[in-house]
Length: 174
Image (cartoon, rainbow, N blue to C red):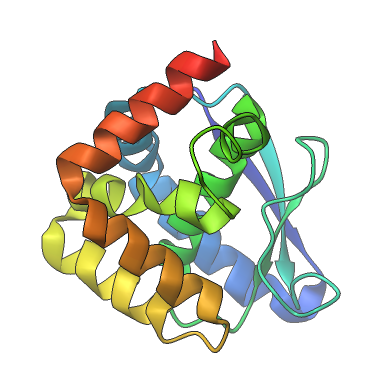
């Protein structure tokens, strides 16, 4: 696997850090392979720093604003594996800078629309449609309406349209 994580935490969050490390050690290769197969993109980073604790200043999980930023994972999130998929998807977009290049020309209004072009299909590739559907439903239950609207937009496109749009985004960015 060409991508590694280095997890850190304050001592009170060590147990949760251990859970994230165990998830990555068990599924990391499959996750990276899933993103590569579905998005046709590879992670450019070799190691991602990740802090497990209370999340960012708003208490959220966070992919970072740049690749020099650590990713932040809340200790209490119920769906740690799905959260890793979600935040790694954001990180992949950031590494390739596709959101800014594509949002205007292709009518994509937010980064979750871009993420949802391939997140469901990546989880489906790695763990099957039941897991992908579960993650999508979980995110659609978030109080921020952006999540539901982005998923509904992506599902309305259908798998082949999502894949075609993603290929167009990658082509435009090259």
